[in-house]
Length: 479
Image (cartoon, rainbow, N blue to C red; front, side, top):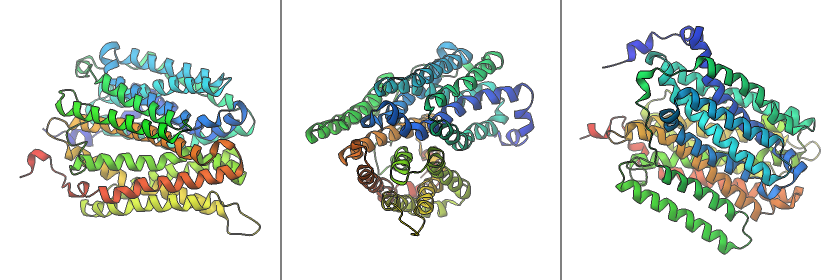
C-alpha cells in the first residue's frame, strides 16, 4: 500500500506548530549540539594544543570522538527498547554534557582525549536517537519533512560552530567554547522531559540486540591504528595495520554466517553493487576528514585568525551541501557519469590544497587564500555531487529483507571510515614531522597528508564499476 498521498498532504506548518514543533525542536537540538560541537572543536583545536600541549595527539581528538560515536549510534535503537525513548534521550544528553564539562576543565591532552571519548559516546547516542525517534513521535506523513529538518542541522552547524569556536579561540578562552554548549543542552533536556514520548504501539518495533561484539571489534580496530601513529618503528606501524585487517576479516566471516550481521550481504565484495557503493561512502568520507588539520595549517603557515580559519574549513561542508542539492535529482544515467567525475573533482582539489596550503604568499602574489578556499569547496563539492546517488542506490541494492540493515549501516560505515581516516591522517602527519610544531614541519605535513588522501577518492573511480550497474530495482526483481 502506498503512503505517498498521505505524505504529500503533510505541511511544514503541521510539523513546526504546537506540540509537534516542540518535539521537532528537541530532536533537531540533539543533532545540532553534536554537529556544532564537531565544528567548534575543529576550530579551537590549534589553540588547545598551544595551551595544554599534546600536538602528537592532534588527530586522536577526532579519532576517539568518532569511534565513540560509532558505539553510541549503534546502541541508540536498542537503548529505546530497554529504557524507553525519553529516558534514552535524557541519558544521552547527560553523557554528552559530562564529556563537554570534562573537556572544558581538561588540564592535559590525555585528559582531553578521555573527555572527548565520553562526549563522542553521548553525541553518537543523540545522533542515532534523533533519527530513530522520528517514526516514534510523528505520524508517518510527517516523516520526510522531519528527516529533512533534522538533517539540515548540519548546515546550521557549519555557520554556528566556527563562529562559536573562533570567537572564543581569538579571545584566548577556548574552554568557554565547551561551556557554551551546556545551556543549550539544558534547554533540550527540558524539552525532552516535557514533550518527548514515543507512541507506545511502535516501541516494540525497536531491535534490542545489536551485534555488540562486532561493534566493539570495529571500534577497537580504530584504537589500534591510532596507536600506530605513535609508534616510532615502522614494524609496529605495519603490525597495527595487519591487526586491523585481521579484525575486519573476522567481522566479514562472521557476518557471512550470522543471523545478526553488522553489515548486509554484498558489503565485502567490490564486485557486488552494495560493496561498491559502500566503498564510495568510505573512500569519499576519508577524503574529507583531512579537514581536521586545515585550521592548524591555516593558522600556523598563513597566520590566519581562528575565526577565519574555521569558516574557511567549513567551505568543505558548504561544497558538500551545494553539490548534493544541485545533483540530487539527476537521472540515473547522469548519476553514472557523476560516479566517474565526482571522485576526480575531490581528488584534484586535495592535490591543489597540497600545493596551496604550504605555499606562503609573498608581496603581491596571487591571493593564495582565495585559491585555498576554492580548493576546499571543491573537495566537498565532489563528495556532495555523488552522495545522494550513493545513498539511494544502497536502498535498491540490498538483498530482500536487508533494506533496513543496509540503510542503518550507512551511518556506521561513514563514522568508521572517518575515524580510520583521522587515525591514518595522524600517522601520515607524524611521519612528516608534524610534532615539531614549526612552520616548516606544518608545510611538510600538509603536503604529505593532502596528496596521500587524494588517493582515496581517486581510487573510487576504479572501484565504482559495480555501483554504476545499479538500475534502481530490488535484487529480487531482477531477472
